[in-house]
Amino acid sequence: MKTLPGKELAAAIRAQTQAEAAAGRQPRLAVVVATADEASLWYVRSIAKAAAGVGIACDLVDLGPGATPDQIGETLARLSADANVHAVMLQTPLPEGASAQELAGAIDPRKDVDGANPLSLGRLAAGLPAFPPATAAAVMALLDHYEVELEGRRTVVVGRSTVVGKPLAHLLLDRNATVTVCHSRTRDLASVTSTAEVLVAAAGRAGLVGAAHVAPGAVVIDVGTNPTEDGGLTGDVASDEVAGVAGALTPVPGGVGPVTTALLLRHTARAANLP
Ligand code: NAD
Image (cartoon, rainbow, N blue to C red):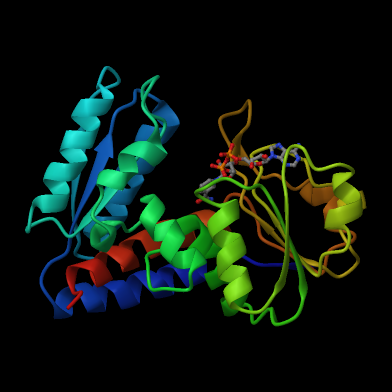
């Protein structure tokens, strides 16, 4: 089985983004945070560091875990109206009672570099230009980088979240794949996933996808990032057993994750230079 790492692709995207950022006005990304969740804070700090590495300014707007939905919404609206800010992202999780999907409606779609505004998803579904969520875009970028044919092929996405599964289904449809979406209520998951020539696991359940879920030779993209007891990360795919069946598999960590961050920066550089 072939391993499909994302680091090299991520580095190429960052290099291209750095050139784009240097050619136009300096892009500025604002990341709104309202959590004390350590993993989430680690992620936003990694975005800020990666942004600095490619010449993108990144402001962490930390409202604290006690922020109200009104405060978050007003902050997103203010940043959307600020001509010096080109890209706005709302980090999850949010405080109890705050809905990311409701609040993301306050992000100007032209600055919505992580495709969180429902308008962006609607435009994607309609085949109109929009920023897709960076994770969904990262899956497509990996498939393209490794020259995985999509046209007419049986593709199964496990997970139907607004940030990954649903937008990804639309991006795959746009490429003429035959798309099936599975979720927590799907009966006999293995009977569906084992028909896939291209299988994407995005359920957030460690080891959900085992050998019985995978067709011989299938290309498997593992989006899952599940914390392990020793402080590491593991995917949704039981890689040890799937390695004996699949044709190719992305690693976790080092697969979809680095490409996601790189694409968020690419989207930011493009948002800064929209006509
Ligand atoms: P989510 O919890 O919002 O959605 C999970 C989806 O999986 C749901 O649609 C649910 O129906 C489905 N699901 C859950 N259990 C299932 C089961 N037993 N069988 C079939 N389907 C099942 O999660 P999300 O935000 O979409 O994230 C999914 C995973 O991707 C998580 O592990 C998350 O950490 C990871 N993620 C990774 C990146 C990255 O850059 N690598 C970015 C975003 C999310």
